[in-house]
Length: 92
Length: 45
Length: 320
Image (cartoon, rainbow over all chains, first blue to last red; front, side, top):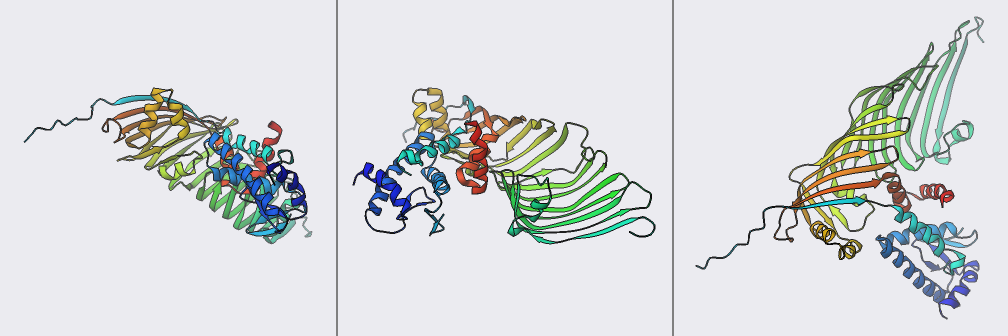
């Protein structure tokens, strides 16, 4: 599985409740199985690169970008999909 | 004893003038950039 | 109605628990849209008398707030305790605020604990053109205190003038809150900020801030500025000096305009022990800051709670 494969599989993995969004700006595995963990690893790797680029470009800290990304990801998660708040996975 | 040459720090001060205009669009810019990253169209969301 | 035609109404506002959402907002039509109360208790009682044949009713209202919290526009407030007594006699309105205490108010920069004691009186016909007597108004700010000396204000006479005194503000805390990378320092600031409030908003003219002796340290490490300095020798010298700048004098003129532009004319004298053997360096820095976008970036960067960020983002939406 490569990044573009992970990108293609991501929407289905989220809709089926395998993967969900976390407040740190990264994907988390809700139900292990299939390629869920691999998809999350590849997507998170790509996200981290984007966050780092934004942080360096704008002279702010990576954790600030991650915190802002986390809030946005949780906010933009479609109803019915999973988000992790205070360590608990919950369906939005 | 051998006299040691004490290089005293030059006395007259260095004068530096700076005009600084602070832009805070950064967080607003980052917020918008994250909108594009965390979007179906980017493949990462 | 009693036989002699007088109207006498006694009302007691039951204790309202605001935690479950604010019932008042549903009843009072013009509850300010940007005021969300999320906790605490509100109690009140009032009477209304209309003497027979007289047109001017007399009424009084007592309100008590306990540990109220919530959001006002884009500022988070918590721990509000206040007693308010309003009285209407003849055509005159009297409002007493014997005690208002607010644990914290956070528009991006944490303010508090805040204390306010004031009285207000006005003609009923012109409720907003009355006389405000400020007995006490002070707040904690960044390790120090912000204080307005007792003053009497005629609200009709603009601009209103207030003298803001700053005592013991910690530079370390200010630089910690400030959303910039690689900036830290120490030192204690005092100052006077003559505040004017006119129809177009607040402004400061001829404000002063200075560091107490013996001064302190300023440290600024920024890869981007250092990289930028390669091509600019004057800036490079400045960034070298500011990497570990021990200052013995820091003085600034302060001005602020209603559009939110803050201008600091800074005089900073000191040395960097590692630069030319600690040769004295005198900085003259004109610093221009945009306070509204500073507060917006503080609110966006998660230093204030989520609900405010949604409001900030909604407000930004139409512009981009």
